[in-house]
Length: 131
Image (cartoon, rainbow, N blue to C red; front, side, top):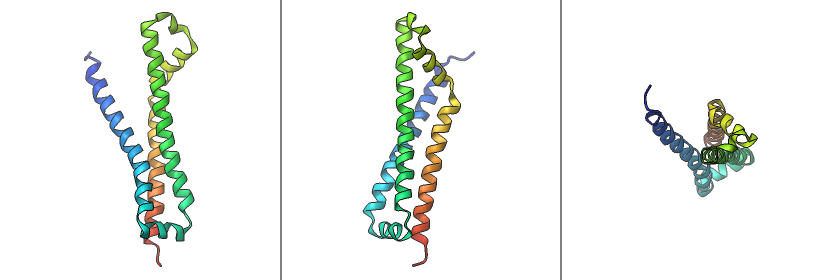
């Protein structure tokens, strides 16, 4: 079997990169949109500004929530390595479950991507709508 670090390091790199890109997109696009008067007016005219705002806010919130969940899960797992008697606690067992629930991590990412795509589609539709 290969050394697990051969797999972990690329995973950690891609995970950090994707989360950074998603949060940057979710925060940066709305800032860009409101800074462009033409786009802002088109969104207001289309009446989709509130929905677009919520789509981007929820997408970013999902990513922040995921980062918090995994950060504290890893902290509990680290604590259990240092103090093995913690291995029987519900917090460490929950942290182990979370660290193995790759499907949940994928769900967080897919949900944020879907929300951002939906919000972006609404922006493009508003901008391209006939005047």
